[in-house]
Image (cartoon, rainbow, N blue to C red; front, side, top):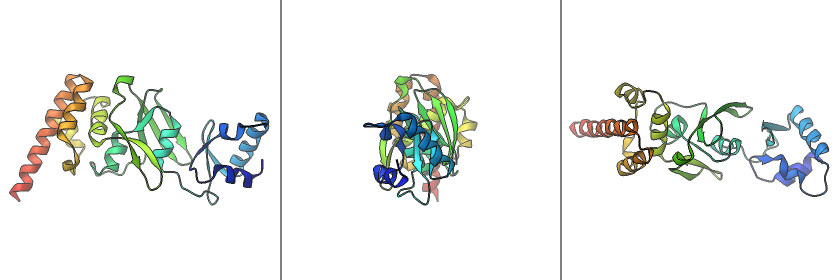
Length: 212
């Protein structure tokens, strides 16, 4: 396969799997050799085994980090600090893209950045939505679920000290009823305790604003 043929086949897709090139009467060994050559010459990036993206300046669309995260591990969604920063609920700019998944925990260093996956039980894989990302889309936790996921996975995440350390902002974006509803699905005292602290923080913040 020629590189121009690859570009035509991929079209506008930000990422692609090697299986796309194996359809029809082709030699899988030769395809793998060609992919390896393109990686070495910098024409494509390998994100993980079987997953690639066109490298600049040949790419038509720059892959959004959240889209890449969804492809790196199936049955995953972006959450924790990455989602909280995306929704403007914490002030930090997060460089590592964090997701939760039913798969094994892992940290991947790719040409497009660092991606971390935290393991969740299947019953906790809820509270996410498809989010539009400038012509692309990815599964991302709701603001409420991203906060709950972080607290659940963080040792001592329900402590007052840790909740203050998060420096939550723009808390009007949080749906308090949804926060309560989603927290109950975890069925743990830790989440119930944390939500009480968060609601108290929101209440105190609202009173401070009214006093200005």
